[in-house]
Length: 155
Image (cartoon, rainbow, N blue to C red; front, side, top):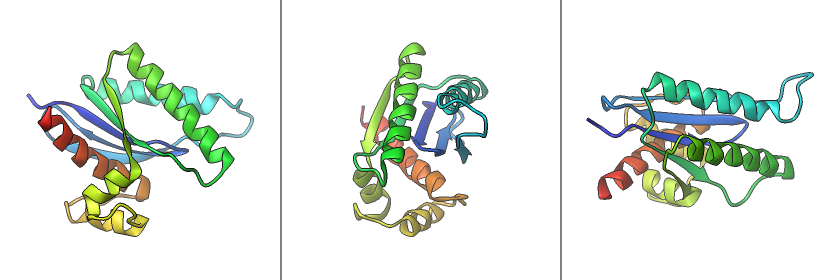
């Protein structure tokens, strides 16, 4: 049986890619944009609920990888990322799912051969593997998944 791996590009629009126990890869992107008349923490509760749905629909997650971002375009982006990261790591700890962050440059270098690849180059690299990502968030998650699969094989 194959290891079930979930790869996430965390953010207001979170890209995700999942390799199920059957080896099949599914992916997408999910919006956690704050909604009107909603408290500031609701997006993180929706994110946590979404993680639970992914876990349930895949019969469990053996390990989880996320894109580790060190620089953000804005203070708001940094705060949102921190909230998603805190929610994710606490959720993984609660469910005893091993998790690991992978630096952005490492993912880009693995996918394209260069650590400073553009969004378009990342989408193109993922398309060469037969995927049709809806946006750069989904492309980043798929690229991370392929790196995570290689990292999991080395263990």
